[in-house]
Amino acid sequence: MSEKINFPFRKHLQEFTAYKSARDEFSAETEEYIFLDANENPFENNEKNRYPEVMHNELREKIVEVKTSQFSCNLEKNNIILGNGSDELIDLLIRIFCEPKVDSICISSPTFGMYAVSANSNNVNIIDISLNSKTFELDDIVVDKILLADNTDATRENQNNIKLLFLCHPNNPTGNIISEKRLVKILDNFSGMVVVDEAYIDFSSEHSTLKFLQKYPKLIVLQTFSKMWGLAGVRCGIAFAHPEVITMLQAVKSPYNVNILTARAVNDALNNKGIIYQQRNIILAQRLYLENECKNLTISKNPIFTDVYPSHCNSILVRLVPELDSDIIYEKLKNKGIVVRSFGKKQFLENCLRISVGTPEENFKVVEILKNI
Ligand SMILES: *Cc1c(COP(=O)(O)O)cnc(C)c1O
Image (cartoon, rainbow, N blue to C red):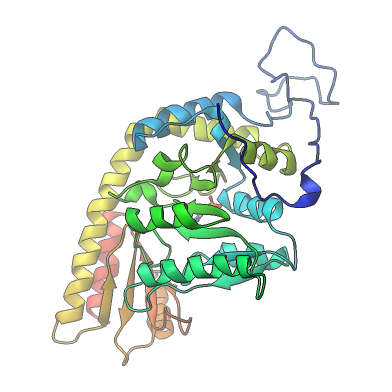
């Protein structure tokens, strides 16, 4: 028997009932029925005339299959919900757990910007406990600071009310991972929900947190079809969580957040994962090429970089020597037809560029330009 877990949902949601939608019980594929219940146009249009499913049952089954084999983990369909990109899921998580003006999320800068954007747009506080400013590691000191910020709740003074901790593993834009030992320490001790954003996990040789899902009910894992799966334009993200959390996300999301065209594109990609894995292998080899070439540019006669950060993502973070300005180098590259990301004066990322791994030809070109900059 599973014990009853008290999830820290917002109070007004505990009694909340979801919108009952037309396609909850019947999907348009159930051909023996005549559907006169949803004011759809009855004329066939490659099934696009029907509303999409609310929970995409078959697609979730397929995702269970692919993810359990890729990450050697234990999953069920009711551990999964799909979103219009993981951006939507980040926002929904904040909306179901955080009371505006009262509760907080915790993040570790520098990291993905959407956690703060979503918190701000929902008027939810942000507690930022930055990563090690030299290595960008979420090291033991950072772990202890996070747990301390969480524990201030118990003292009843200076209450942070942290409901959600966002960890990005591997981290965007720094490319590094969180060690399993530290992650487990957080999972064992943190009182709120722990969200691990694994948008780039497909590019890492390291552990996925998915294998901890059954053991830690307060763990939520986010993945996406936008990166390795090559479907950024299609908009589909996945949250993996305890079934009660999934049910709450379902209640609050808009019923048709994942449309029929998106579901088909995701289904096709999952059916052709051999090609995707081949592309990933090329990207990984190219990441190594870029990393090595950039490292050469730290030790050449005229070094242009001081740091090349090791990456588990499909991008590389580099820091320019003080004589060069990342915004100016950005402009120079742009004038030669190449767009990278410059962090300019952004705290912790001063004078850094993030270069996504492109095709072999694209990477060769950017390296040649950098060599002659
Ligand atoms: C790209 C990215 C996402 C993906 O967002 P989508 O909305 O699914 O495209 C999520 N988290 C991080 C850290 C990312 O870099």
